[in-house]
Image 1: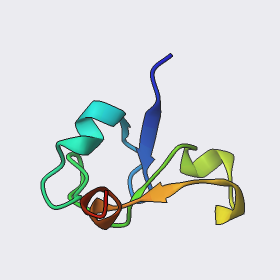
Image 2: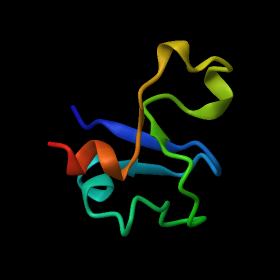
Image 3: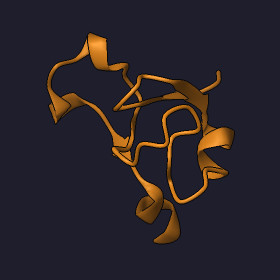
Length: 61
């Protein structure tokens, strides 16, 4: 099963492979650096139940 991530600015859907290749963690659609979540913005108003990732999460690993 493919895992998708959604831009927290424009809600663009990308795969985990695309997420790993992002330039400076910027969204390929809107160039935002707000981060990515496993849940689209319109499905969840609270960040308590989502995972937001940015480029430092990948650099630390």
